[in-house]
Image 1 (cartoon, rainbow, N blue to C red):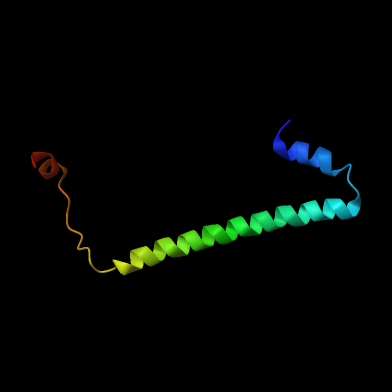
Image 2 (tube, helix red, strand yellow; image 1 turned 60 degrees about the horizontal axis):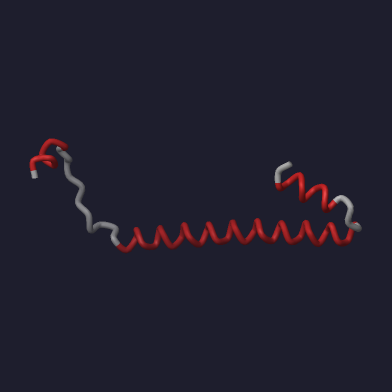
Amino acid sequence: MNIAERIYETVKTLPEHTAAEVLDFAESLKAKQADDERIRRENALATLAKYRGRFKAGKFNREECYDR
């Protein structure tokens, strides 16, 4: 039995108002995870933005890399 099934089995025996609290808690965890992911992405993009224009890409020759 996986975790979702165990949660379902436990919650279905609870009173309706208590089950609603469990649902609210699970939804708040999901929203927090989405917010954390959004913040992490924004921070990564901000780091990249600091270095925008500083790197000049050139043609890469793999054989020259090994000669060094």
